[in-house]
Length: 490
Ligand code: HEM
Image (cartoon, rainbow, N blue to C red; front, top):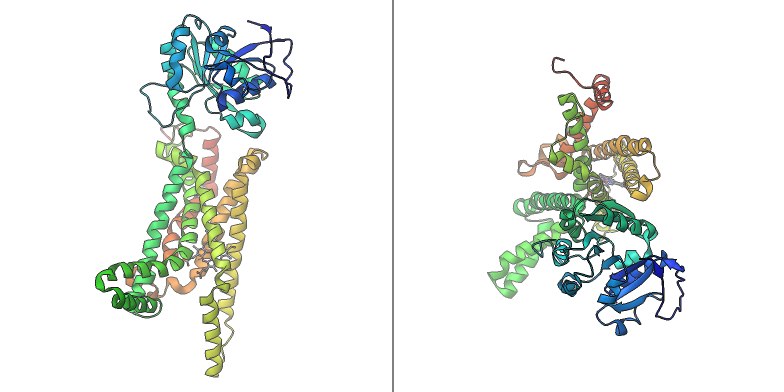
């Protein structure tokens, strides 16, 4: 199959083909086919493109490659990349005899999952039964092929029935600088074709949790802080609601009363609630990062062995801890931003000036309250320390950073410093609450404040962790992790 490469197209950016080079065929002159052809040329292969209209395609193809009709191109090489859409595969049917024993690499993808009853590669195999079909390269985009593996995903998945055919394709992938992984027989092709259709699969559960928690706390705080004030006092923030409601009723009649109430409540509620929702959701999600680890340790303690699988739900939960943590960090960022702009808000400046003016007018003196100052400084310092460690956790979870850390360094930061972050943020919130926990006026409609609710989970996680690090429990768990198993009679 080896022959001298002859170029039919002008060599402007000459990619010199070696005098003796292996020739491969790429059927299809679209973006993907052209990018693959270019990389093959750069890796030293002779490339022949197969096209329906070879004459009109020759201006598009990379310099140094040939363009022929499909039949002639397929004839000229043993390894043929099929870079055309599945709907156009029928051009291969008349070539079935010619393709006997040749390796066909199916690069295709679909627009959605389950678009066809069988995988494209299996369909291709049924059209050309004498050929060795291999599914592969479909997880790479034209962009990543053009930029090369240094700037893109390096992994190439391969599957097919023939071991020799797969080896030939894997050799090409390796020569192009990708790392190829044999995923098994052609029946895996459907799974490989579904890969590029997945949209952030590991982010789905954390995103659902974040959305659910935000919505739940938003409505909880809206009812507790805004609607409560409106119903019981009819002044303060609800003052504005009443005025604009009255205007609306006069202007447009009572039909839109309901709409107006909802709209005004929402408008006032958005600021108050989102300011509180962000830190609350952040703290709960940070605890959700550490809860599965603690549960897994207790499960190992209970079972007395590490050689039994965790339940599926726990496995899935542990796998999305990084995404949970990064989302939690995002919410913490929003909390810090909201906090930073409090002093420049018109409402805050107005209240402060009003207070000063009333003190002067009434000729009052105010005492400096050392306890309030101490409490304020403490909860702010704990918040700042907690947030700094939070950012450190986020940075070290990025692959480019975690790759340069040893396992011991990584687990020190993510486990020890992670629990310390949870402790600091929880203490920040406890100190912020201070004596409000004991005051009955806090519990409007017998409901606790939002941050009191959000403290439940982190407190439980920290208590369980405290139990785990007590010397006798820690000793047992360390032995289990080193392979020791409790006998049935122990
Ligand atoms: C509340 C500051 C980091 C969790 C507060 C408040 C301030 C504050 C000023 C009172 C907010 C208000 O009056 O509306 C800070 C600063 C931080 C920081 C300066 C770091 C630079 C964090 C972190 C967490 C957190 C990392 C954990 C996720 C909370 C919670 C509340 C709170 C749960 C109670 C929210 C409420 O219901 O009002 N923080 N914080 N904070 N903070 Fe932080």
